[in-house]
Length: 226
Image (tube, rainbow, N blue to C red; front, side, top):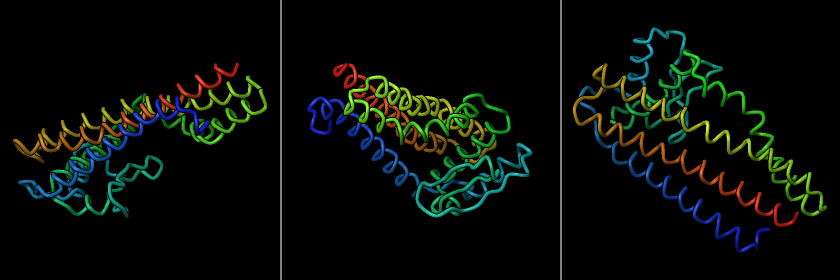
C-alpha cells in the first residue's frame, strides 16, 4: 500500500495543503501578535468581558501551556487560553479569546453541530484507530466485507472533520460580532482579528480535505481488489 504510486499522487496534495494552512495560521498569528490593541485588553480580560456580558458567570478562564493550544472544555465549563494569548493584549489574543467564547455560547445555546460533533467523538476515536487496520486486514485476508467495514468506520473521521467546519466558522462569526459590538477592538483592528480567524479556518478545511483524500484512496483500493 505504501509503495502504491496512486497513493502518493492522491495524498501529496492533501499534505501540501495542510502544510500551507499551518504556515498561514502561524504567519498570521505571529504578525498580529505583535500588534497591540488600542484598549490594551489581554486575552483573559477579553474572554471574561464577553462571558460577563453574556451572563455566563459559571465559566472559568484559565491559562494552559503551549502555543495555540487554546480551547473551550464544555465538561469543565472552562476557557483555556495558551500562554501567548492569556496575558497578551495583541489583536491575535483578542480574536482567539473571543473565538473560544464563541464556543461557549454554542454550548449554552445548544448549537446543533457542536452537539453532533461531541456525540461523534467515540465513533471517531474508533474509526481513526480501527478503520485502517480493518481495511488492511481485509485486503490481506481477501475479506472484502471486512475491508468495507473499515472504510465505514473511517468515514466517521471524515464526517467529524466536515461537521467541525460549521462549528469553527460559527464560533469565529460570533467572535467578530462580539468584539465589534463591545468595542473591544476598533476600526482597522477588527480586520486584523478577522485575518487571524480566517487563517485558522484554513487548517480545519485542510484537515477535512486530507481526510477526504485518504477515504477516497481506501475506497479505490478496496474497489480495485474486489
